[in-house]
Amino acid sequence: MNLISSMLTAFTMYTRINFPHKDFAKTDSRYLIMGMIPVGFFIGVIWWFVYSLLAVFDIPAMVLAAVMSVFPHWFSGYIHLEGYMDMSAEIIARQRGQGNDGKNSLNVISLAVLMLIQFAAFYQFVTTSQEPLMLLFVPIFSRELAAMLIFMMPTFMGNGTSKSIAECTIILVLLILATVIACIVTVGMRGALLIISMLIGFILPSVVAMRSKLPGGDTAGYSLTLSETIGFVALAIIY
Image (cartoon, rainbow, N blue to C red; front, side, top):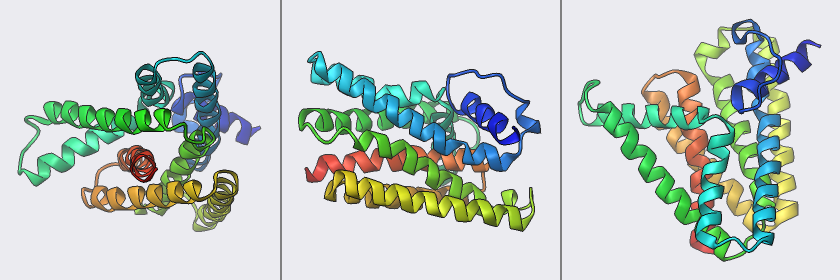
């Protein structure tokens, strides 16, 4: 029951669906982090379904690309996008030697650049009729990587026994391997490209973000958002 309750709490935290749930502070943080993965699967299924449904009705490519760009952010309550915006503004501000002044404008600029790139990538995805099943794997893999990143953070390691965290990490590694294999088997070489580009797109921002020593949730949201974006950009470039 504790696991089920924690998963419902994770869905409430990471999506717009409001299940009866426990107080976030009273929920085992390991379950909340691992809960991102079924949430990613759920988002991927709906994302794929929405794309397939709209494609049947011959929706204009620009409209379809716009919907596909916005939908995952909207459905997740913008929680990861918020982390991306905060981290982007903080990193740019530190590079420019700024204080808190001007961070709001940097938030907006970072968001505008991200959405423009995502729209362009999705427009290419739509107009070249790529395999819709890739939409299923993107949110799953990005959230698995985000969960792994959080488990590896020293601040999180202090919140539980090393044994329990090690058990979660082993399960997470197996889930990542299963996702990689399923994506490559289902989608083929484009699936392999998607996985590799997302992995690179996650690791590089994570290294930059962790140097800033900001909260783990912001770092994970920042890297998750960029990994998904870079994955689709890579597919758009090489198609």
